[in-house]
Length: 380
Image (cartoon, rainbow, N blue to C red; front, top):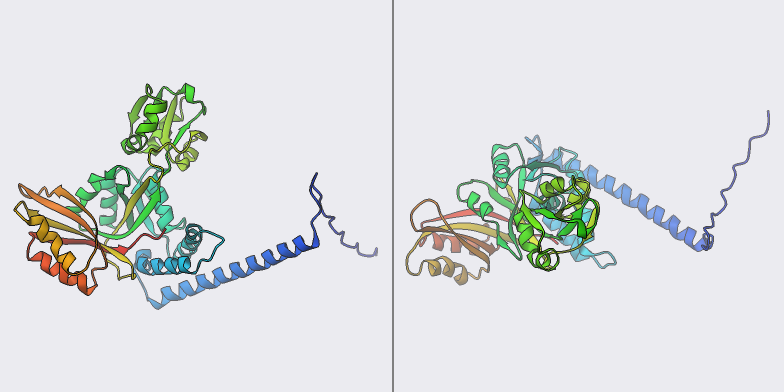
């Protein structure tokens, strides 16, 4: 029998113009590999404890029964508080969000309805808030998102409510007038609008597809650069990308993800939004109010009749009890002539004593007060 062959050592590979791997660099890489093994082991340990939490809660009906947005918000805030660099808060929050998403999905993935199709900013908001282990349900309209959550076909929904430059999305507010759903969270998404096409040549463009909100957010750039191009509004930027992919003389406005999904991989120009800090706020809608996270926002709907001092009567209880108002928006109530509904965002949770006292005073002055939800303030 011939003697066993000695294993051959692999020589260091030297790239052209690159020095061979030094012993010090090899030690650093070995240390990185060791850290990676520890991280992987700790993630597995965390997942095991997450399963124990599920078992401790007993037999529950569905994945939604295991989800605790207030607890997730507390965990993410601790991540931010502990961060000393060099990685950004936003990046670390993203990493931990994905870990929590994967751990929760061990029970069963959450089903999240959003304004589709795939590639929309609403889908990006879902991924930012729930992570990639949640199951997204692209739907045709904001109304359908509400319907799917109300029926239980979706555990939660994500809907746009306002943009930093273009203001309120009225259809979302109007649906709260009659819906019994609650606001369970919020997402703030930086929106970067790109000009996308199949050819990548701006001189070829004769028409552009986009959602009306995107046309509004890029109006100045379009006037300056493509004043004569036909602008065709569509139901979503993803739908615009789908239409634009079939012709070299067409383009679409939207996020980079829409371009990848629908084959418009040539980015003609980015970003083209007029407001460089363009941000859209989304609401997470569900069927219940969750406990306080310690840093929350409460949204209410107040119905009042048109009379002198009506708005003062609405706002003064919050001032007396030291509650900050973040936002107020009025809409016709659609219930009675000259009756209005005020959508108000307040700092604090419905369980706070000061909030309870202020709402009790408010109910004495208004026709009706409806609590839409108390939920964690968006984590970056």
